[in-house]
Image 1: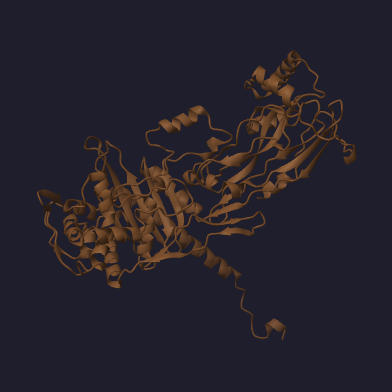
Image 2: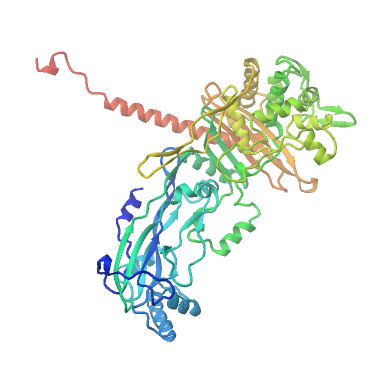
Length: 621
């Protein structure tokens, strides 16, 4: 925040045409606001710089920068005629236009109204000039032209984490009418989306105050900064900037639409939460052009949608771990129970099929997970019934909002009898259970929920509250608000159950019959599960390709969920072919970085060790 503190030492005084000379307080005239000419002394507010939003290591994700607005100032006393005001403005704008080589326009009626009502204050002509324009005008601006330094928001990483950070917009409309006491000298900004919106009060800071005094002729006689603006607090997020950047780059390269979420299962911290496509929040500063916003709205890939936490999809086979745990922990089957895996299974007069067209033999739970045998899970789901599956789903955080401080988080859906009666006018039936057991039917989950569930599974059933923000700090690094790591639940998953589930998930990645070979990482044991689900009308059916899990399997530090959202005309979409490779690439980058950091630390430690000294040499003996 050094640049902000530096700016606070810059003179914020408006360079009024008349010279500033302090006068004794007792000589001032009592303010009156009925008319412009009666005003002798008034105060204006100075907007405060917003606090930073940073990643977990303090690297800035959102900052405040200094921009320059082009303003027109008028000579005092304010005794020009309307014609003279228009002529004055046109001459000044013509001088500026010739130097910055772009047209500047002004509404004549608004110009005259401003002069008559509030001519003592600058009139904004153009906001946030380009650096080249500032350089052209700064050293020798034309008379009557002011380059006013203003606080603007800046996102140094462009579109990275744009959905999470959100954006800001100018608060309210440009003031009009007679000057009001303590009105802001320029429009302040407020959060409109994301963390900027949810933590607006903490980020906003407190405006300062400047006092101006004018003599009876309308000439300025003094100006004084009576209260300096107080910068807002800083919001420290749990995100890892490098991991977030990698996740977004992988999504951009590998998909048109998708999401990746990575959580530390030991704390519940969200390390990356990427959605693609994204948008650049800098486009909203100072205000987004109509054409740019329309392009975002009209884009069929919906870049304004944060798919990672605000969209929910059918999970498909990644839900099979939940079905297996519910069945085993409810005593319906044992871990070593062998069930057939035929190519199809009849439920009443309906035939439900496996993705394999041949009989896979008798399988236990771990083997059924590895081979993702649908028909094994149809049998188990129908035997288990809905209640245990629904209960365990909720305990894993599915069909529940995670509680992160972002609005409109997707609730997801785990259908129960009440839901089925409301929507389908019947209770859950065997056919519904068959679909439910493999993550189809009416089930919906978000990528964030699945990463969260994998974190619980990786952490032996300990469910840490998911965190996106760790704390709010003052400018002096004092903790204003802390969001501490806390366990919210402990799921009673038996040790043998957990071992079997993990064995099946590891074999999904490394086994010869697994479906996620493209998620392998050298020397790292990865536990994962692929899934492919369909949704939408048959004529335009779409597919969601998933890969979820955790790594390293023997000491998990990363729980993850990757979603590839297929288009209506895309074919051949699958979790193993589309989602697993994204996580494989991401994990390889993570562990290479870790190894590089470890090697650098060891090298630095070795270089810091002093050379050995012979006995007695230390004392000169």
